[in-house]
Length: 194
Ligand SMILES: Nc1nc2c(ncn2[C@@H]2O[C@H](COP(=O)(O)OP(=O)(O)OP(=O)(O)O)[C@@H](O)[C@H]2O)c(=O)[nH]1
Image (cartoon, rainbow, N blue to C red; front, side, top):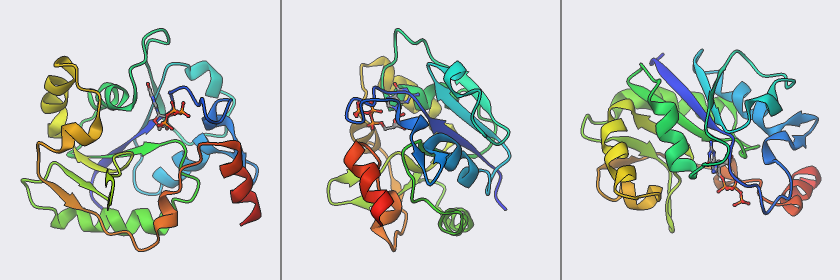
């Protein structure tokens, strides 16, 4: 299997949820350990980028390393990703938001198998929807770091705008539900009903 590193983002305001999303249990398992356990199926190296690692110490997480952001200066997922990427030594990185309760091991492993066929020019391998790329559940080449830092240093904070500049390969998604984002208490309720 291809050598890759997972970066899981657990920061942000969770303003729509009203409490830290990463800690919301779905079928008894909080979102952060849920996604880390899925990531574990394709890598032994998992970095969790967060301004508050102490909040997550008690969780049943697989082996992982915390990368701490400054809690008084978080700047969104693009900057969180760059901070994680600075530590990465593998060619490919799997970037994951913490709020993806439906991502399954089989889907992820199928995607990972396809990485070998991504042309060298493509800096990322992501699902595309009519609104744009799905940047927080997909693969990036670690060599994109200097490009990302340039963009951030010029004030850029949008994944969509950053990705527009480079060739990205489309990752196939057979069930759109896989990328369901758990953003609100109603989303949590919906998961419990289904
Ligand atoms: N490490 C880190 N992760 C972030 C940051 N901002 C957002 N995220 C993560 O990015 C993913 C998507 O976040 P969003 O749902 O778009 O934003 P949010 O701020 O968490 O939530 P809302 O306030 O409801 O928009 C989640 O996994 C967040 O934890 C950040 O500044 N740092």
